Image 1 (cartoon, rainbow, N blue to C red):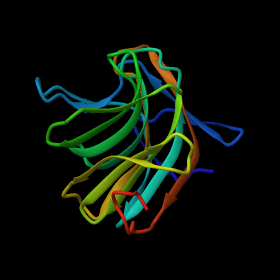
Image 2 (image 1 turned 45 degrees about the horizontal axis):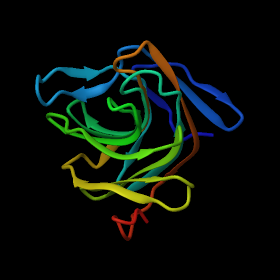
Image 3 (image 1 turned 90 degrees about the vertical axis):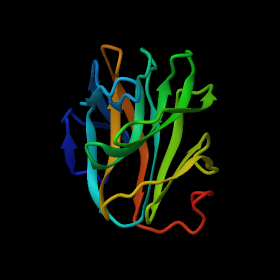
Length: 190
């Protein structure tokens, strides 16, 4: 049902009806604070190693209980070089597509606010260029950002469930696809 075979910060996997659920304990996140330098790297990360170009997409959903609760697609080169695309409960009380790119320190970019508790997310790699997209229907993807990250040829690629300020949550992942392809149009995510 899913392509992942390894853990960092192991949690449990609950599989039912084409749905993969990952519980996150409270106070879990991946973030290197750009103001204080505080490092959080304790959220459950289920992944597989991927060499070269790829596209990962999944539909994500959770209950948006506490600020920054999120379900995310996540790529990691090493502890301080990684990126995530989240559907997150923002500090403004919105369901937001949020992207974070970390190369020594994290940036933090709120994107579009959505009315729905579920969304399709996509991360793709083309060499050292990466693209993040979201979709409300699973067919038409809109760009969140394109960025360059000097990363190893082989990355950890997978999904994260996080609850940075809360007591924990369960994130739902479905329609998971990992394709080892090279995007022709990185801005379009295809």
